[in-house]
Structure formats: structure tokens, C-alpha cells
Image 1 (cartoon, rainbow, N blue to C red):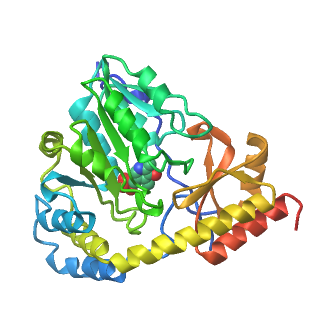
Image 2: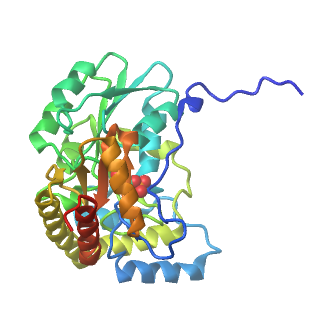
Amino acid sequence: MPNDIRPQPGILDIALYRGGESSIPGLREAVKLSSNENPHGPSDRAMEAFRRAAHSLHRYPSTDHAALRAAIGSVHGLDAERIICGAGSDEIITFLCQGFAGPGDEVIHTEHGFLMYRISALAAGATPVAVPEADRTVDVDAILAACSPRTRLVFVANPANPTGTMLPADALERLAEGLPPQAILVIDGAYAEYAEGCDGGAALAGTRPNVVMTRTFSKIHGLGGLRIGWGYGPADIIDVLNRLRGPFNLSTAQQDAAEAAILDRDHTERCRNDNARMRAWLTAALNEIGVACDESHANFVLARFADAAEAEACDAHLKTQGLIVRRVGGYGLPQCLRITVGDEPSCRRVVHAIAQFRGLR
Ligand SMILES: *Cc1c(COP(=O)(O)O)cnc(C)c1O
């Protein structure tokens, strides 16, 4: 039967997001270093809270996430009234695009920026605008030059994925200060805990009318499988996002596990310290075998090869050794491989295998 069924404009321009690979055909045990997951997993207390939630599966969850927001507010020193929780920070990014950008509006992300910004902009009917970076680092002047009367949102991850580079707080402040009056700066702090002395954008989101910070439980809190994230910003912007949010967007298990996770500061601290130690080791070891990488402020390093062919060949070799890393051609970096900082044995294995690939061992 002929029909006129069509999706909204922009939807068919969305390329499906592909997560990091998680298995190698024919291999039972692979080391997964492709999705920036925490090698230590979540806090025991988070797992215990998750198990406890099994006893109340027949009850609807809290709609206002008050306990979780209070816990986040207390740990980060933030006003809980200005926090919104979502099914991963992805959902907060979606709300921001839905709430503030539509057909005819522009959403800025950077050349190597996180793919979800472009996807969410297109899903809202808006036009994503990619701005060049300078040597794999976000370029504030290039963003300001790309702003127009149609710019509604500017997304910057700090530290950035997949480059691992970051901007100092004063550069972000200059960006916020220079934006046109109708634009919001979104600072994505998914990796903020891994960076030395980084507040993830909390100070700017707490004081400026045009800055929102997003955070996640998927990385340092080791809860990627459970889908919890949050945002913080000016009360009027958070109010808009809450109107878009489904009343039951987070299950009791999600809320309780996240609350326990964030309150376990010792676990967070151990994961942060361990990552810093292994990240330094991995970076130095790669440099030693002639593989360049920028200084990373996150829980992964971006290894650069001569060209896309060498990166692909190295990836193929790593697979034969049971190691899964991330190709990042989709981020405009086909000559690179992104390697999550795993536990010590995994880091040693990946360096050994790359050295082997380069004929050094
Ligand atoms: C991993 C990641 C996130 C987290 O997404 P969730 O939806 O919270 O799992 C957000 N932003 C960036 C840049 C990331 O790499």
C-alpha cells in the first residue's frame, strides 16, 4: 500500500552509534580496552545496593531522585536543586538538544568531539556544526569564530574523548564569556575525576547563566552497564530539562546503586590513583617503543601511528593477541587507536603486543 510515512528531517542523517567492540570471534577470553570502562568495576556498596533493589521491583521508583541528588550535591559541594539525573549523561545531552535546539538552529561540537553531540543535535532537527581543533585540542578561538545568531549549544568534553587532551579552566571561562547571548556552553565532565585538579566545570556551571556541566557514573564509578548520569547548571535551564524528563527515567536500582557509588569516596580515590599510575606507565612505555601519544588527562590514551593502514594493521595484530582497543576513524582520527587504561596486567599485555607488532620483541 503506498503511503507518505516519513521520519522527521535530520533523522536519516544519523549514523548509528557503534560502541567499542566487546569480543573477538573464536576467542573466549578477550581483554576489553575499547570503551573506557573501569577495570576495577563498581564499589562493593553499589553492587550491594543493586542487589537490595531486587526486593522492591514491584514499586515505582522515586520521580525526583532526591536522595541521589542530595548525595551528589554533598560529595561535589553543589546545590542539589540544580542537579538533574538521567539514564547516562547521554540522556542529559538529549534533553539539552531537545530543549534548546530545533530546525534552523546550530549545535557546535569540535572536529574530534564525542559522537553523541552530533547524533542528539540531528535527532532534535538541529544542524550540527563541526569546528576544527588545534593538534587534537579544542580551540576556543575557532569555536568563537564559528558562532552565529543560530548557535544554541556548544559541546566541549573536558578532558576530551577520544583525544584525552583538556583545556584549563580559564580557557573555558573565556569561551563562556564570548558566546552569543542565546547560546549555552555544555561542559561534558565524563572524565573529570581522572584529571588533576579538575572540577569538571562545576564552578562555571554554578556561577554563569550560560554554562551546564554533565557528568556520568559510567567511567570512574564503574557503572556503565546501569546507565546513570547527571547535569548541573542554572536553575532555569535545569527546569527546562526536568520538563522533558520522563517521571520514571531512572529505576530504583539505578538510583540506589549510584547513590552508594558516589558516597564510597575511598573506592573513587583508589580508582583515580590507580588510573594515574597506570596511565603514566602506559604513556611512557608506548613512547619508549616509538608510539606517540598526547598527554592524557582521562582513563585512556590515544596512540598515534604513521597512517590509517598502520593503525589498522596494529589493531588486527592486537586482536590476534586477545586485545580489543578502539579504532577512532569515526572521530576523524583513522591513524590512531584509543586504548583504555586497564589494570596492570592488561597494560603490560597491550604494550608487549604493540612492541611485537613493531618488530621490537
Ligand atoms: C563515556 C562518555 C560519556 C558517558 O556517557 P554515559 O551516557 O553517561 O554512559 C559522556 N561523554 C563522553 C565524552 C564520554 O566519553
